[in-house]
Amino acid sequence: MEDISVVDAALLWKLIKVVTHETCHVFGLAHCGTFSCLMNNSCSSEEALSQPLTLCPICMRKIQRACSKWGQDKFPFQVKTHLASLAQYLRTVMLPLMGSNDEMTNTRVHNTLQWIDRVLNFI
Image (cartoon, rainbow, N blue to C red; front, top):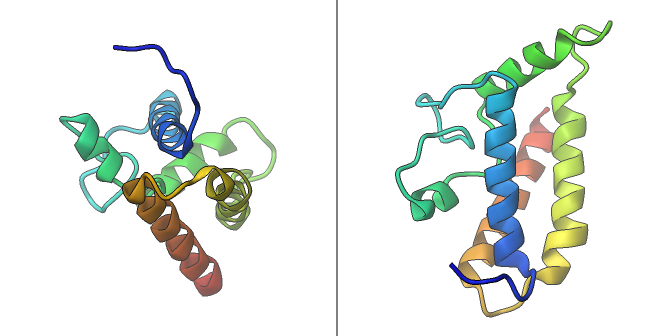
């Protein structure tokens, strides 16, 4: 273990993945084995980082249901709004931080953005 001296895209990517995954556990989601999903179980940090930043459709619906228990609206968690916000975050925060020194993070961020764009066009 060493102290963090700089916050770069790779570190931020890892932080986002861990915090999002663990927050989903707080909302009652267990590990997912159905699709490639943020909630897939992992046995190593490399395996965890190779999984997507996004939830599969089943886990996304579970989050919708969990959030509906606190509001009047049946589905206060809107998938389209969530994905659009995630894409905006990746474009405005992650892309400017990325340099050419971490090709793996660059690829993961760009692949995530492409996937989100395809889903938003579909829905």
